[in-house]
Image (tube, rainbow, N blue to C red):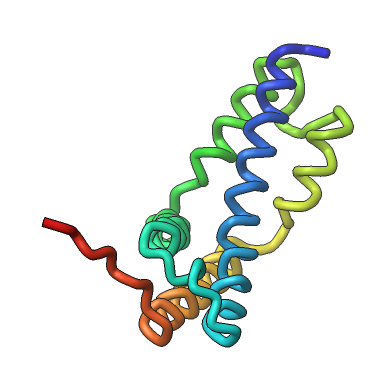
Length: 133
């Protein structure tokens, strides 16, 4: 296997992990709020989660392409691919995270999801850590 395509697959796995963190994290935060799971109120986890979807919303509104998408595409092109994966792992990861819809639809979904995450952040705020002196 071409080393560049392996790097592209690795970036695709990171990308899928990022998406899973945002989507599954949101579901777990809501479940944790209703089931009183304390770990879902962890300040660092909640802040990173909010910043993650905030980054996605900001890049979408600004019209930027995700840096992970650009990096994956870069490695695929260096590996001799036309930007699309032709190996098993890359193919299936890309099929899971890339869809052929108009950019405005993605922006609307990202913004609505970001508003939902912010709403849950306010509705069930994280526990702010206490600093011992």
